[in-house]
Length: 92
Image 1 (spheres, helix red, strand yellow):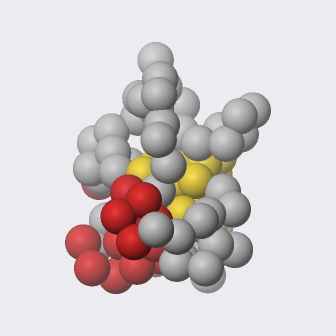
Image 2 (tube, rainbow, N blue to C red):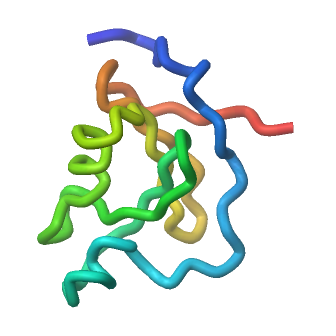
């Protein structure tokens, strides 16, 4: 396991939307979620692995975008699926 994320060049989106309806897949499929994550590659909102759909992980496997960040209130950490490391992205 890497000690650092080696995929930071793939971080294209850092701003969290002001309004988040929920996981785009859960909303489409009529499912519920536990926690929400934002893809740093495209900005889409998906649900965590504790949610029934596990859509953030599915998005990583389908789109190949390796880094998600928590959009839960008060949380500012990101996760790299490839390096299996949590970290904070410094935003100017």
